[in-house]
Length: 192
Image: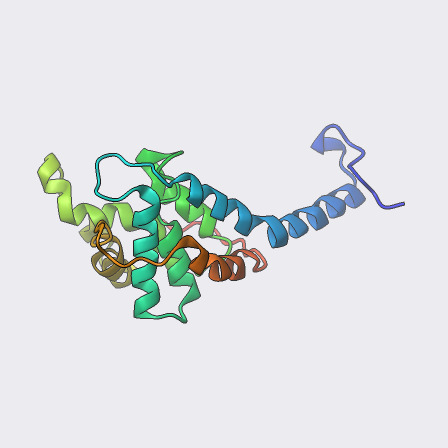
């Protein structure tokens, strides 16, 4: 009979078989459930609004639509654009780090960095109105993903608040979300 649960009540007592069993379960969950969880959370953003002319979901869809129109074959960029603000509801102050932690195992380090840093790079457009230094991104000039992040914010994220923009529905992005989040996870250290 196949093992249905581990035998331990403390990781200090875990056997190799227990850990291998858990690893198999986790791999199955990653392959079959991660995309559904991401899509479900995006749907929860529908109607969430803090004063913009579009809600959080529409902003994410617009950002992804712009990325798709620029390069329909760049699955990683499209998914990063779609989920870049996924943490707005659960971690509004640090949502870029939240979103980066979701994509980190499935996309390149450069795309992870772009998602993680997009908040600081977006500050270029509005922080001066809050009395903050809108040049905060400059401290990262020279980073391999600096120009990519500037481009992401300028072309996809910053202009994606337009209620008249012809935006693709979430269902249009479901195949690419499933492709990215069913990849085997890669565990590399976070970039600073």
